[in-house]
Amino acid sequence: MNEPRNRRITVSEASRPVLPRHARLKFDEVRQVWVILAPERVLAPDEIAVEVLQLCDGQRSVSDIVDLLAAKYNAPRADIGTDVVAMLQDLADKGFLTQKRDATA
Amino acid sequence: MSPTLTDASPIATDSLTAIEGARSVAETYGIPLAVLAELTHRCPLQCPYCSNPVELDRANSELTTDEWKKVLSELAEIGVLQIHFSGGEPTARRDIVELVQHATDVGLYSNLITSAVLLTRDKLAALADAGLCHVQISFQGNEPVVADRVGGYRGGHAKKLEAARWTRELDLPLTVNAVMHRQNLHQLDDIIQMAVDLDADRLEVANVQYYGWALKNRAALMPTIAQIDHTSRIVDDARVRLKGILDIDYVVPDYYALRPKKCMGGWGRQFFNISPAGKVLPCHAAETITGLDFESVRSNHSIAWIWQNSDAFNRYRGIGWMPEPCRSCEFKEIDFGGCRCQAFALTGDAGNTDPACTLSQRHAEIFKLAETESSQGTDRFLYRNFKGGTLEGEESPES
Image 1: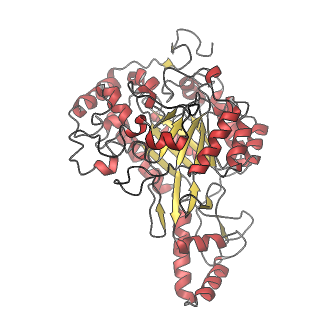
Image 2: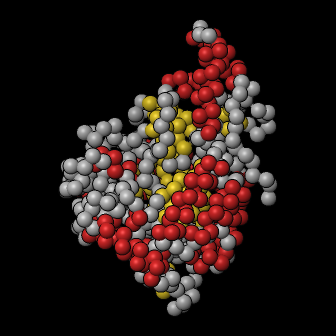
């Protein structure tokens, strides 16, 4: 069989992250909150996390995402970059973030 | 199958907090998060620790396809987010693909909890196309000698390995569920490696919980204290070594615990179970408690009504029912008094403190009992089946 792939991702501005198939971001109409559905877990991302995750499509790089958010909120790019990378790294360490297999990290 | 719906989530960070059914204890129940749908009690395996009741539901009592579809629609409507298709063996139902498709159509996150021995690659591909989100395959060991003996099914282990590979080939996420006990704990290191080799996302190291069939087999399954100490070290090491590669959930054995588990996240707080015949149960073992009446989805009541109003759900909900020492305990809103089924199995009253807790008067007694059974117990299994069980060696477990 194939060598098992190492899922551990080191998030950088060059990463092109995406939620893996087992983690679904959806708006829960009954509770009126955004949720991430994963095996045996339901997580509630905060507003910023939702915004970032909605931009994680496996095509955009973290750098693109930071540019978009810095422009939208007219905030210092360096600060946003640090926060976004930290948040995505946290998600990746918990297994809720992957990257497209053909993408380069 | 041995699902481990003990807690919605151990994860909480600044940007990402876990959701629970109830936001506070004052609000004793919220909207259920997940439901375990036991589609059938039929299963080709005969594991001696099966979490199904000793009195199994017969095939002719099972809910029909249309009944299950109506249930799934109703669950989505009231705010249930996840559906775990379990059994018995859920793929023993011919309509499994249709039911997964319906879950997808109504917006439920679906998980297949399977022994995998009935799966074909085509069936799994059809399930993936129907929107299945996740597959959980049980393993009884890391090689066929132990695994096929525990499952009472020759050739089962090889089939599981094959199905696990298909799962990953189809790009479905995989959880390996390993139910652990005295007779397979020595394989834990190899089971962890097997999960990595199978490219699993998650591994559940689930120590047997002793109700129903497992209670009957307790003397054959109870681990020794030395094994448990060793196990905890192996799991701790693996979690560090495999961070970001394999997520490991660990269910500690109650009899050797100091604090009871927050069973089902608290009775009637986050989860419930629907039996093959349609009974709505606070947990999959709840039918072991005599004296509780369970409503059916075939009754005139809606599922929402049953969740909110039925006596079975309200009897042990929140903290009002608690006796001492629970009532004045500082942990009462953390573990909700532990497990009602275990309290019933060990004390005869589901309203007693779970003896897994060191504050229970019975704790020392069950600790001693575990110690004794683990060293003096027989290794012979009573296999689970519709005949009320078959002792290992008396006749072929496959007959």
